[in-house]
Amino acid sequence: MESVDLIYKAIYILVIFGITLLIATYSTYFERKIAAFIQDRVGPNRAGPAGLLQPLADAGKLFFKEDFIPAKSNKALFILGPGIAMLVATMSSAVIPFGDMLMVDGREIWLQAIEVNIGVLYVFGVVSLGVYGLMIGGWASNNKFSLLGAIRAASQNISYELAMGLSLIAVLMMTGSLSLREIAEQQAGFNWNIWYQPLGFVIFLICAFAETNRTPFDLPESEAELIGGYHTEYGSMKLGMYLFAEYINIFVASAVMATLYFGAYNFPFMENLRAAISDPVVANNVVTLVGVAAMFAKIFLFIFFFMWVRWTLPRFRYDQLMKLGWNILIPLAILNILLTGGGIMLKDYLF
Image 1 (cartoon, rainbow, N blue to C red):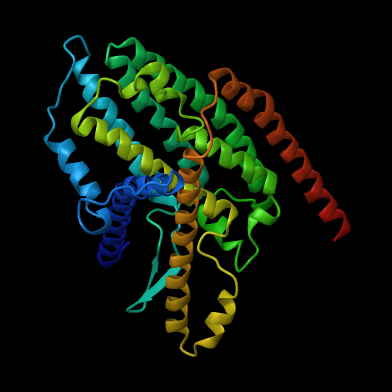
Image 2: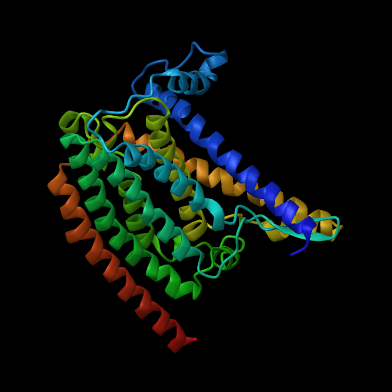
């Protein structure tokens, strides 16, 4: 790879990193606004016009709060826990294709940080490491409530990762690839996987709620039972890193669902738009930029759905959560695999 290509790639990675942090920051604002709308309240309206500076005020508050470390805790691991959670969350978006290819000065610039032919496995491998940040933080706090929250987080993530992985197998059977870019390319136009995998998508969506510890699956930090769960003893920016990691995980989960099931950067009539512009380079770049806008529109719709559900549904009991994962979602995911395999065989036989 030439030095110019490396510079373009570095700029793209920094832009995606900045966008990820910006979305995570303002997700806190929009969550409060959505909650206020649902509950017939006003929401943040003091810091800046329409309360738009509220996330900056929250960040400043967290930065300047006392950084307290419990005397009986394991100090090294207590500090390491939030760092792992944040690091793993920001690594997850590296293989997600946010757009197609741009032509700049005769160079092809792919709007994807890293293209690997095992992108799906990379996402699952990195996301599964996130539970270590919760486990280490809960155990190192030397607080029984924190430890119980960490144990809940570990068991919940393991349980729902199984159903999530099984739901994804059906998509991989159809596409024949583990590359997220290839999966996106196969959904060109309006040929999205959601039309062929509605059951798999519903299973994946439910598991995404559980993996991100969002209501009604927020048992690891259930304040009614565990005070605050795994981050009970945390304050200052250590708590802020846990909260940031949660919102980044929501962003990544939304991007993965948009890529796997909703065509990623593809949108209806994209070929008509390409054909309407005579210059092929300009046409390619216009279609790519519209595709990027379409990708982020899908992501924002999923983020809104995460927030809407939080302020609509009550929290499950822990036995209900485990029963849903093991007794319902895993059998449904296996059934979806069998139906998909049967459909593929029937298609090959008929056509």
